[in-house]
Amino acid sequence: MKQATPYFTFNGNAREALEYYKKIFDGEILGVKTFGEADYPTPPEADDRIIHAQFKKDDLFIMVSDTFPGSSVTTGNHISLVLEFNSEEEIQKIYDRLSLKGTVFMELQDTFWGAKYAKVKDSFGVVWDLNYTKS
Image 1 (cartoon, helix red, strand yellow):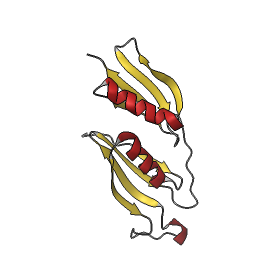
Image 2: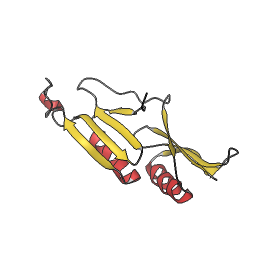
Image 3: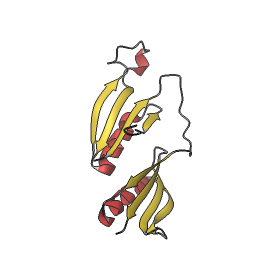
C-alpha cells in the first residue's frame, strides 16, 4: 500500500470547503470537475456541484466531492485527520485558522508525549488532530 487518501463528501458546498482549506493551509486546489462537465447522466440542478476535486499542500492530500442530488451527508465523529507539523509556528498558525470558525475540542497545548497538540472540528464538520513533536 502506498498511501491512504482521505475523501470528503459534502452536501453541495464542496467548492466552499476547498476554498476554506486553501485559505487555512495555503495549499492548492487541483482538478475540479463538476457533474455538468462529467460524462455522467445527472439532473440539471447538479451541474455546478463538484463530482471530483483534489487539494494539496506539501504531503497533505485530500479528495472531495459533493453528493448526488437527492443524497445527503451525515457528518460523523468516527474519522479525524492527524496533521504532523514541522514547527511550533506552523502548528500555531493552522490552529488559529481552524479554531476561528471551528469548535475546539482540545486547545493547543504541551502534552505528556512530548508534543504540542490540539483537536479542532472545522466549520464543515471535519475533525483535525494537530501534532508537533518537539525534539
